[in-house]
Amino acid sequence: MTTQKTISPVDGSLYVEREQADAAQVEATLERAVATQRRWREVSLGERARLCSAMVDAFVARRDELAEELTWQMGRPIAAAGGEVGGFEERARSMIGLAEPALAPIELPDKPGFTRYITRESLGVSFIVAPWNFPFMTAVNAIVPAIMAGNTVILKHSAQTPLCAERIQQAFDEAGLPEGVFQHLHLSHEATEALIRDGRIDHVSFTGSVAGGAMVERNVAGRFIATGLELGGKDPAYIRADVDLDSAIEGVLDGAFFNSGQSCCGIERIYVNREIFEAFVERAVAWVKQLRLGNPTDPATTLGPMVKPTAADFVRSQIEDAVAQGAKAWIDPGDYPLSMPGSAYLAPQILTGVDHSMRVMHEESFGPVVGIMPVDSDDEAVRLMNDSDFGLTAAVFTRDIAAGEAIARRLEAGTVFTNRCDYLDPELAWTGVKHSGRGCSLSRLGYETLTRPKSFHLKHA
Image (cartoon, rainbow, N blue to C red; front, side, top):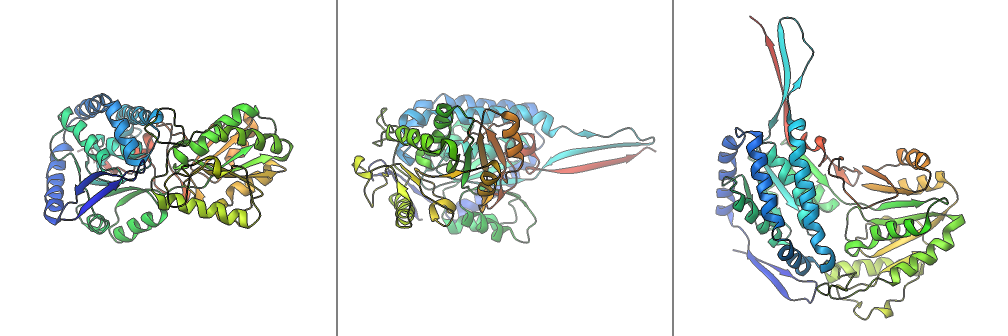
């Protein structure tokens, strides 16, 4: 067997060590999932809801334990880590509540001599590959609706956050979910690809990099199965001249620096009307300088380490390249003693004098840096916001809601906001365009890729 090791970004220590599943364990898991699904799809929706709700109850009862483990696995400050348990609960309970209307048969108008309707049928076995950055919330997006729709689930979590899979399993077990409905495996990349290719897998949900999404597409090619791919972003925000500046600063910078910028829907580009550009930058710099970079187990820490030293060094290189091309860095890294090359700790940074030729303005950063550019009009802002290979979310900050909505309609993104950002409302569809992926999770629409329609065309005798 191969051992996988989770190195904590907090202090570089070995935090978790697990044996990866071998071929026999994978085969037994698949056989169990297939056999169980034949029975699970016949279980009433009410019973599925009862068991999933009991799982959520068991999960949130361990909030403090889960928060501490999350901090050690991926570095989020302990003061914010418990919020993910709340997010897990909100999304799970929302999807449980939406299941009945989403899965209800579609009745058609009367047609003399015929009965006609459409049902939503379960797919079979859903394989869910979840990431480390929001390890509970991204996983639950697919897990709960897949199970509510009558599928069985196999979860493969990131090797950085293996305890997250185990804790979800523990909660389902305590809830009394039948064995085989939800299972998890610790897998190598090669074993993950092999499982995706297996003909007994009927659906794949993947959250991660563009390269990872391409891997999924290669391995499902010719299988004609449903996939959901959420692949990240380079999300923009536009600050119009008419904003409440303090409110806009708080909203957009929290969206840029929360979780050390390690959010697929975090703000990575800001465009500000030239009339307020200088005032915005001045207040933005002051806001960022109040962030406290430190050990995330300290409740006073507001900015934790990135997940790995290599991830931090990647963002450092983006910043260095931008400065070499003429950008201005407003934050002195020397003010942050923990921020050193080769360390997972990285000082936050604001850049001006940037343009779209710079890596930091077109590559996904996934770190605590944001570039800010002045614009002279709504049209210029829209053009720059859409000038990206990504399209997950986009935000407009304005007092004029009608103008903000009109601008939002022109933006190439799966979710558009006014006066907020970096948030998933579980009753709205979560989707992306361009390299941000394909498919949809959350909302009633999220059940469509987890089921298939079946039409009944019954002629009366």
